[in-house]
Length: 126
Ligand code: FES
Image (cartoon, rainbow, N blue to C red):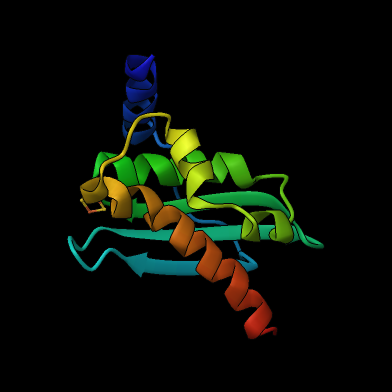
């Protein structure tokens, strides 16, 4: 079963979904994993409080980039509150393979960027 998930991660890494930039995103956030310099930007377009489009850009290891790709697919259609409620476990379930402590920051970078963007919107409304 692990092999299937591994293949899925490699597929997302080699053929990332929703990679690029949106025109006039409502939310845009960028961050870096300070331990390796890998980076992710996530952009979202909203209809009310529901995410209707999501994109990411970045560079880095397979786990960080694949989880960003998967996450953009996952969040389209979700409300901002649903995104705020997403946890580390949701990401680990999405990836589907055991992630050791060394790779945990890779796995969670996209979620960290996504959440910072979503919370930031509320803290600094325009
Ligand atoms: Fe940098 Fe994975 S090695 S995020």
